Image (cartoon, rainbow, N blue to C red; front, side, top):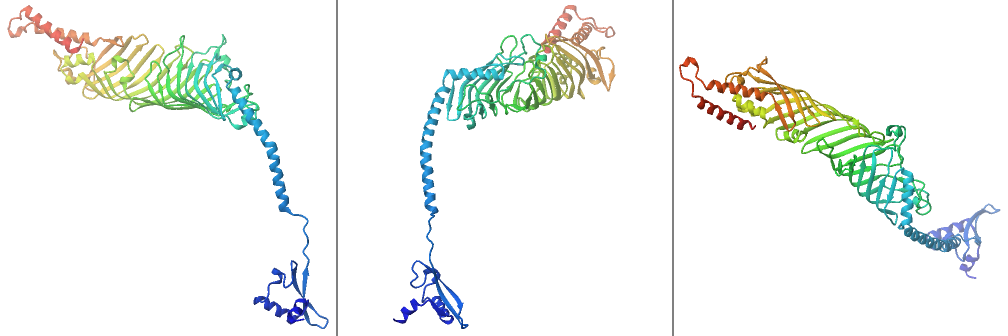
Length: 550
């Protein structure tokens, strides 16, 4: 037996031998027993233990441990579980998928059907308290479309009906597992809403609406998309091109709001945001405005307008706030301010080319839409750079007094107050001033039938009145601040105004012409021949009438 073989069979070492063996392993002469099992270790792990011999010396002992056999293998168990789950998914999922696709195809066919359309129309009619008729529905994925919706037979409010075209919305997935319809925003390409005096089948509209909130649809469907939903939940409504009409005894053909983008918020909320953007606002008897934005909230049938920004012509603007009760008699109250309005756009066409400037002021409007004659508007106004021209009174003043500047007056300031009701427009506390030419104050009333009446105080400076032929007219009386004042009464029609200043000026001219027919006795010159004097007077009067544009 060689030394190498004996070293391999040796299992006990002295302390020195053990240290020598470990030193050799570190120098690479042998493998680590813990890594390769040592010489002849096979598949068993080997470790060295140090023990003290009876004689006091230390000895190292090589200990071999038998590896335990594993009966549990987690990796293989996991692979078996995954395979089992795959089998279950295939066996269960495929039939369910086929069932779902089949059910969806049947639902698509049913949604397009006439029965589904009628059933939905009847159910929505019950929910909203008005007759609603839908066009055919179409479902594409979760996108639900309808050709149109027509609303009629409303009762107890100002809304008469509506027609909305090309409706589209998207179902929320929970709708397919619910008895409700849960929808995203409902959008439409265009629509027309019609309003008019409230009719409640003989019951007083205001009493019928007291304490009653308008019925609003909330939520609807069952498994799949049912045709008789319990409720309909809509997150909002948007109509891209919306027109609003006010109908009297016959349907109106001209909307008071046209081409506007209408939107409102979640119909399930107690307060619903509602607004308009873009389009035109045209109310009979008022100037036409462009709509920048109208925003507000609808609660219990009352539309509370937080702010309405309206535009007029170039730079004109009107801002309003207030409320409108859409139930009952339609009570309303608005207040606001306006600026940079062209006066020629807000007066009767007869006066449009006679006035100019920038109109500013404030206004308060109140009344009831269902009560004829209830309109009342009040406010104050001021016209900056107010130009008054092309007017018969000014022309006659200019000709008679020999002052060309009187034919066109630009007032430094012109202001007053106004009151408007159903039967008249009253301008009062009028005050206009041109420092060197003319002052004006008084009151003017225009009735609904076109009649005109008023009382004005007209003031002219002494240096201008002195230019009059024959001197200052006697009807220019009291003086104040170097101005002499005359009373002027207005009458006639708004497009054919009359005043009493012209006849008095004509009489003054005629007196002057009669004086020109004869020679003053002090001159000793004979009186002009009568025929020649009459011809001269007739020529002067004709020229005067042409100049004043009578």
